[in-house]
Image (cartoon, rainbow, N blue to C red; front, side):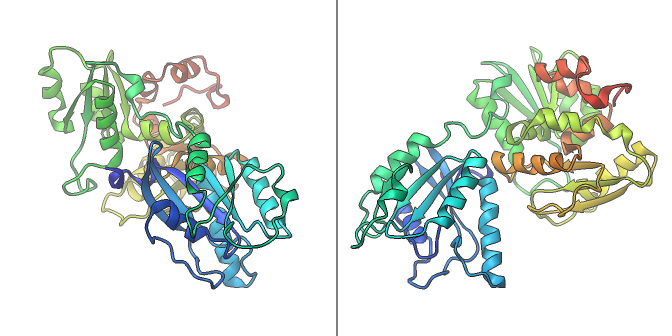
Length: 415
């Protein structure tokens, strides 16, 4: 069902425009539901509003209603504009809603340049065409424009068709279905511990199961304690074993070396972000020294557990590797500290709640500051001495590692 698709796995369509151009009315017209507050009072929309829906034949999408780009410059208005600007970093497609009778389009021109610089496809939506007035034809001359009335529904089908024409056909890579073939056996090792949600699997585990089925493969799930028995019961060897990263040591000792092995977190990093860059980032770990700062970044907020991976385990394992004395900060949510330049390494979670564009942006920020970045699964594999092995399911990455093409590999043996 569309409602069960996580927000991070949906195409994100963001709606921008000045106050009172009809952005909220447009969302209501597109969804056929009063999901956004409509008012004649400018500035009614404050925080971005997210609405998940099925947009056939495109599939599951998220519509994002943002505050007006011309919001007043007092403290509250500035904060609204800041939040609207942050939506840019997760937008796969943008709708710029304008009143065609406007005389000065300076706000819109500035926003169009931001879309262009980020390679975000955009449609200019000239709303309120049911109202009388003189259209600024010169500004629209070279714009990809659709004319609509969100109030009457005029032009809404043309807008829908235009969205289908320019929307990315695939906004994120597959999870694992490109790694297996029909009738391959895929073993999914799913520990059931205090971090496991009661009665449910975590999203990367669900994705792995579904992708294996979509590929025509035959998934087998078990706990790490039953893995040896599960492997012994099979008539043919699995093509791939996927494990929770925290069970790498045990699983690697049980799974024969000729069987490909990786983790849910690494597959998630490949789907959501730039895995080669995350692999390159982990090769900076041997250079960590006492007093160095490391940032551990989580994309979601959760209640810390007694043996929390981001707050307890990873800091402990990193300090054991480096000989102690590392200064480690853990930050939850969607924001980094403003200054990343003081860190020697950024370690990111699996990003299952983010969409691909947002994760790529989160990788871009440390890179601009000259700070290497890796993720939980890649780092754990390195610290637990199974790093080269978990790259083998990805031949190009494995070849780069074997050929020592990354700068941090020079003169080091790795984990």
